[in-house]
Length: 122
Image 1 (tube, helix red, strand yellow):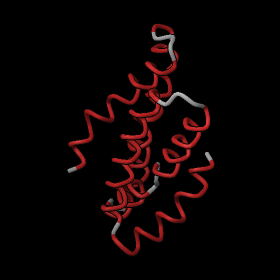
Image 2 (image 1 turned 180 degrees about the vertical axis):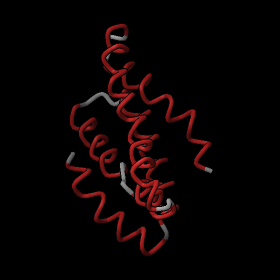
Image 3 (image 1 turned 30 degrees about the horizontal axis):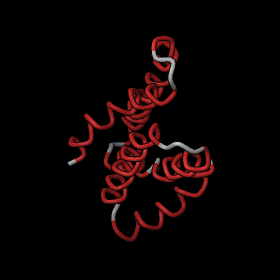
């Protein structure tokens, strides 16, 4: 969450300077790579550093970009649909964690859909 505190102001600056799409794509790539690398880090300080990077890369830029291109009447629906995968994934954690007891494998399994969807960015 500390990464979420520092990421958006810096992302806002870079979004205005270089474009929202570039910042959203780079944030998505960094988030995906760090999510996949996380289970293989052996130390707690390393895990905390990677989680900070994940929070920093979890930028609201894609949400803002979607709101800018959406017509005002549909913005509430688009906002809900953008948050829906996160809500469903959070609900699925309990069921998947019941079968996958190791936290590393759980993190890897839950981050694997990001790897599958990574080519969709381009």
